[in-house]
Length: 111
Image 1 (tube, rainbow, N blue to C red):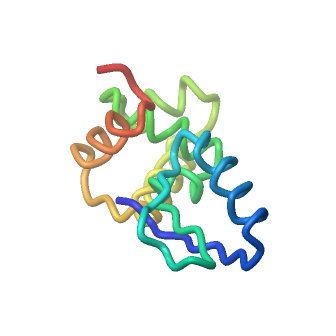
Image 2 (image 1 turned 120 degrees about the horizontal axis):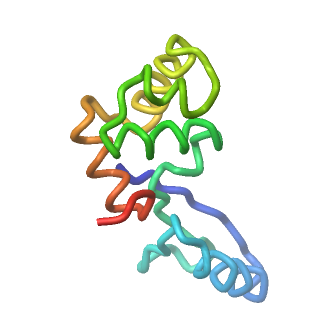
């Protein structure tokens, strides 16, 4: 799931600098065909996740249970489940298979 972000920059130099900076971001893709005074990018959604949610996402994608993730991270299974619910809602994912596909597409786990 990718979200679109439009950054308006009326100054040509500012617009080009934004394009340059955004072109190096791993989870952002510049969308061509934007209006002349804007830079439009598509983000994978990783930018909406906290660092802990990213950790939990990767561990879910690797097939770990909430209990196993809790033990690895030193947190409660209840907290892991809260992270799971939040990250799946933020990314509009509905099951563990979708989480795994997302993690693979975004380089969070090895193929």
